[in-house]
Length: 279
Image 1 (cartoon, rainbow, N blue to C red):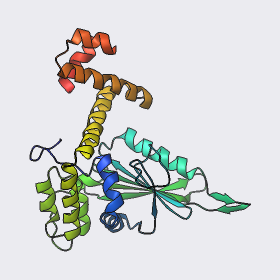
Image 2 (cartoon, rainbow, N blue to C red):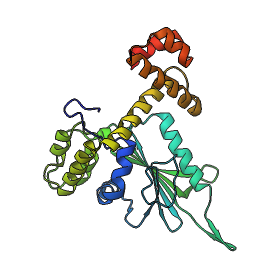
Image 3 (spheres, rainbow, N blue to C red):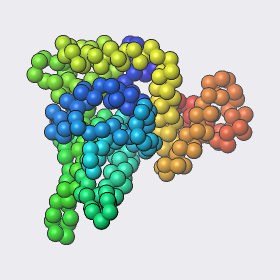
Image 4 (cartoon, rainbow, N blue to C red):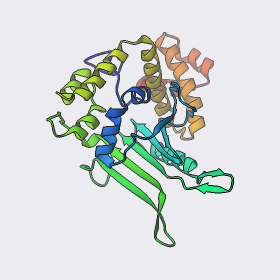
């Protein structure tokens, strides 16, 4: 799929993998989050997930949505943690926080909303920082708005990590960026919980149904990135162009001439020549 050592490798950075594993391996994620940013998700219910295995609601905008009473935690896996991706996550946070609470009769219940970003990048202001927390501040009165909190976890800050009995946090986070099961097992070392995660990922790698979803996600992201490289920044516009690019790419791989592909998809000959270079 995406790995030179093992063509059945599935990465924890992929949305499909992240959502699937979160349901059955909550302790792994709970410990990673608790030890990194001191947020305890153990009492939160998995309220929303795109895979939607028995959840109460579906929302195709979010990766993970957790709920406890009136409080929500949004968790996003950002394999490509660019400004556009992080802004989109903030918009989801503000949209959820905009409710302002729940009303029962005339009672208003205060609501707290947290966004946790797993970013496959380094913090621009401190390349060694593993996590950064943000408060929202009312600039006029210099008051902290404690209803909303943002945490960014920077996965690329973890290099050459191997479990040694006392670095569980670093071990769990480093596993997200492993590029093969061999490297993932080397990071996990003797940590039993981490090794269980690797076992399940290896099983998923042999699951044809999951493999199709995994490959489709990777292809879709490549096509969207190509569309954005061509200057289609608007979300809907980039998505529509990505569909055209995906169709064109499949036709080109099957030996259809550039002229005929251009006629069939509406993409220009110049765009198709660029596509052959990029994809």
